[in-house]
Image (tube, rainbow, N blue to C red; front, side):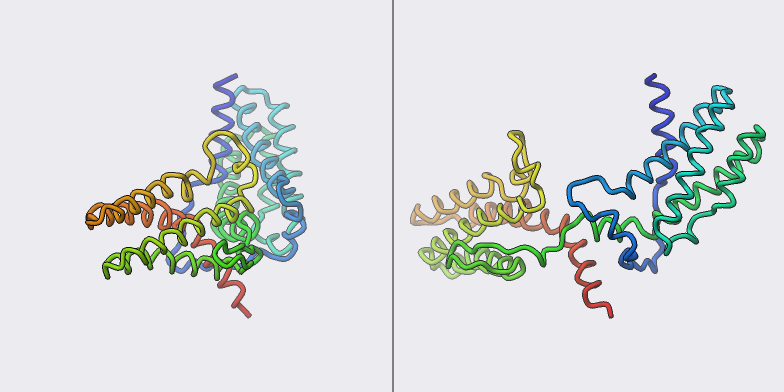
Length: 287
């Protein structure tokens, strides 16, 4: 049973090959007809369900073929053909990316047990899957799996005003920069106050994470908040405060703690979230 699972997994992965993108890659928004398949947030998309059916039936065909169970292989091949055709009909704008003739011939080759044609046609079909994935995976992920920050409002704990996400991030960034600038100017009292402002805003940022990472946020185990806005960041700020309170602050210790926050919180969060946000904003400005 384990070996069968591994074989099936292998065939599923063949339908999603290592995707190599060309240097002139253009990421266009998904067609409007795709929207209805992602209308319910938190629910597995009907489109994803259809892709899984295609992949599973295709893999099952070859498992049965390998076991010389040709009638069973034909049944799975027919299931693949039906699922493949349905997918082509679900998004009319992508119909040309499907090779329905190759799909029909593939089913026929299984029925006739023509191994040479099976190999040729299966390769042809896998190429259609790979081509579509290369062309549209990123756009689908960007549109439907990453909510836009445009919909997010954040309560700024400093003035208790609700502001847009972008505005809040600018304020957060300013607070963080102020800590270092004021420290370098030896204005330690002002740097201390900037730490308080940044600490409050960093805690406020947790509410932003929870708007998307709902399930992870409510688990008792390690959650998303521990990665970018965890207690280690607040502990680093407390260490800076202790350094300031000593009367003779150590610049090396200060820089070490600032860099920890900059690299482990700011940079790591940006590396994960900004590429998608940049694409979404580019689409907004596309006529």
